[in-house]
Image (cartoon, rainbow, N blue to C red; front, side, top):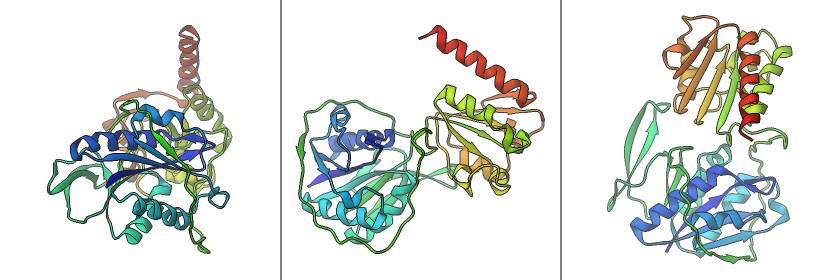
Length: 320
């Protein structure tokens, strides 16, 4: 038996969320005394994985899997899981993994628990804590299934280096290529994706129009951050729907969330509530967002944001 970790990558680079999943799996392995096996699809940069303690790496290279398709990936990962007798499968909480998890659960007759935020409170019975109600509460889930799939909430576990010298296996695989399509997140090579970002710079109607978005993008570039927006902004076509964050868009769980010209509707606040530090820039001191902000600046975004960006660039220059 073993713990299997699905490792996501983009442009041949392993995603930070997968290192977090691997960190979780390694800690779990010490509780239940099982080997940790990482499964990677079409990524040749495997060396960073050894910093996080896998005992084995199953590296799958298959041209038909170059584009993510949840049906195909579920078929491959379920076959790998069966071959190594994995009773615990750890994945990240990314958009692609949300599609993947339900299919894996059916194929393996496994229980699936999302938004896991800690190691098990108990291993017999197996009880894990997950966030719920848009990260406003936590609940303990007892899992009675023989096989368990856990998706790890972003930034809840952290990275825990544990160097190892894993055995690398390159197996031949057989899978039935699905004729069904599934959603896949396409990310520009030049931009940081919301799913992977540690910092998100988001803006709302206070920007007054899409022609002013350059101040948001400039700040995001300085911080190596992803750009995002409120629902009204995406509805009006100022920004793509893929950038809409909030309860009805993409949930955000970053280390730093900067909201510019966003008043703070309850759906938006619910979707970003698990971000660790929230900074709000708004010219309305009564904006609801200030009530949940860690730091707030009352002022005109067109004056505040460029000055903030200048200060950050100067700080970076001094410290490089």
